[in-house]
Structure formats: C-alpha cells, structure tokens
Length: 154
Image 1 (cartoon, rainbow, N blue to C red):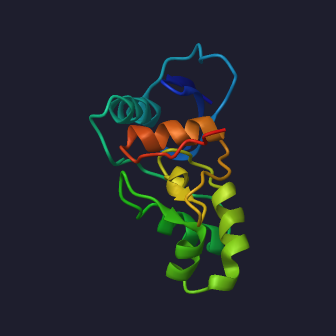
Image 2 (cartoon, helix red, strand yellow):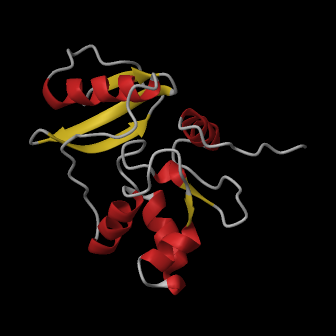
C-alpha cells in the first residue's frame, strides 16, 4: 500500500484492480516503493487539489460498504467544491430525516477522505464536527476550498 505526502500529512492509499478503495491520513512514513498506475494519478490529482489547480477529482473509485453507506457517500460526492451542507440537510436529501445518526455514522466510515468530500459536512449550528482526519485538517480543507470557517473566540 503506497503512502504519499500531501500538504496536510501523509496518506495511505489502498488500490484494488486499478481502483482507489481507501485514502486515509497516516503517521506512517512515505513508501519506499515507486508510485505507479492509479496511485500516481491519485498523487498528481491530490497535488493539483492542494495547490489550488483542481476542484474536483476524476479517479476510478470502488466504495466498499453497505448500500446505505454508499448512498450517503454518493450524496456527499455531489456537494460542490467550496460549499458545505449539514447532516440534517443530507438526511433530508436522502429522504429520511430520522436517519440523521445513521448518516453521520456513514460519513464517519467514509473510506476515501478528501476525494469523497465528507469534510464538507458541518453541524447544523455551523460548527465543525468530527472528521476522521482530525478537525484541524477538516478546517484546512474547507479553507483551501475558500469556505470561511468561523473560529472560536475562546
């Protein structure tokens, strides 16, 4: 599994059959192996994204999860660059407001961070809420996309 550098830290890539199946932040050191194939394309697109040259990704993904999780991740993937939505609005979009906790759990289980932009989901009160990569990274991703993040005064 290749590990590549980004401006927000190293990320681990899992690839199966030339499809990205996982992207997660890691403390592990960079890979010694050469980056080739889809891993090289992921690296190139991430480099472009972090340098402000790209606002969407065009990569072959294989999202592994339940049908419900996949439906949530597909809805998350429709949130445009530089915009956010809330867990409640996403639940409404999926047609089941009562599923807000299940939606939150599915977002928390997102296997492909950054590319499936779960960082664009915020709390109803506008606050940053959980992110598998850490709230500092979530804030940095939103700021990179030009979304003003309200910082606490305390």
